[in-house]
Amino acid sequence: MAKRRKSMAIPTPVDEDWQRVQAKIDAIVHERDQPPDKPARRRIPQQPPAPPARPRE
Picture 1 (cartoon, rainbow, N blue to C red):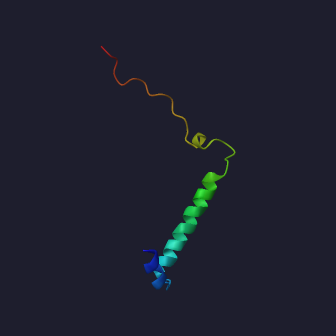
Picture 2: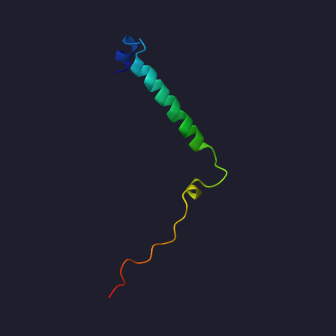
């Protein structure tokens, strides 16, 4: 597969789109890898525990 890629070195619109996607992914991963000021899980508003649906009998 690596050999085949060298022969098709002409950049295609798909390759450019893929590069853009890779850049976005890299940015997101980089952002995620930074130590956050607050714990990441704190972003989700905490919900009170749900009351039991039905009392057991």
